[in-house]
Image (cartoon, rainbow, N blue to C red; front, side, top):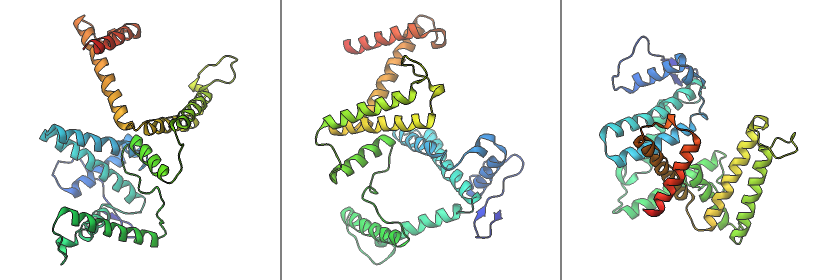
Amino acid sequence: MNTLDNKITVPAPVQGTPEATGQLDDLLALMARLRVDCPWDKKQSNHSLIPYAIEEAYELGEAVQSDDDEDIKGELGDVLLQIVFHCQMYAEQGRFDMSDVITTLQEKLIRRHPHVFEAETLTDDAAVKVRWDEIKAEEQQAREARGKPKRRLDNTKAGSALMQAQDVQKQASKLGFDWEGIAGAVDKLDEEIAELKSELTDKSKEAVKYDISKANIREVEKELGDCMFALVNVARKLNLDAETATLTCVHKFKSRFGYIETQLAEAGKRLEDSDITEMDALWEAAKQHERSS
């Protein structure tokens, strides 16, 4: 193990071909080796891993729902990988290591369960919840003392981007930052879509032509995000859940694409053997099949 001056431990890479031992230290050494010798792992950053952490959390949820032990073990391992990966990189930066993370968690669990580890007596779940919230408030006061003031939108729930977007809009609405009706939200959506189209347009052409090769991809990303945020706002004004609506669309898309695949298979063809014209015709047939079902 390599220890920095501030007592942060950077795991030493495992040598040779490692074995699966089930030990945390060996896992940390394996991760350290990957950061040295794997081109993909070497180029990652804490920010680049964010989408993977979110994806793995969702996949764990699906595995638990399936109740398949092998799937659950695999997905729990993938979530653990994200933790180990982040800790390795933060240790390399000299900020903290796995031991610090574990210690912080232990302290939090002990602090938030005085009814278990101290003399407090809480008789039911409701009392535990009240005490839990009191302790979290005390922790927030400690954060503020460290120069981390609490802002009004800090209570936004963690979750997917759609879930966070809808919740932050809801919180802002409670503070009076909102349109009275849906018209303003729809107009804002139109405005954002127009701005996205403008970023995608090749302005050197007289006719409107979308050309991503001429676009500033970072500006396109910002405008696309604005469009999605505005669309979520429309969903909120309609009292619809943007996440549920999107998942419904995903399910519908998978179902229709499955129909295409089945019809091609019955004709003795693979998806790779088809083209967009044939698949689009089958897509329309899938929509008709839905209506008649």
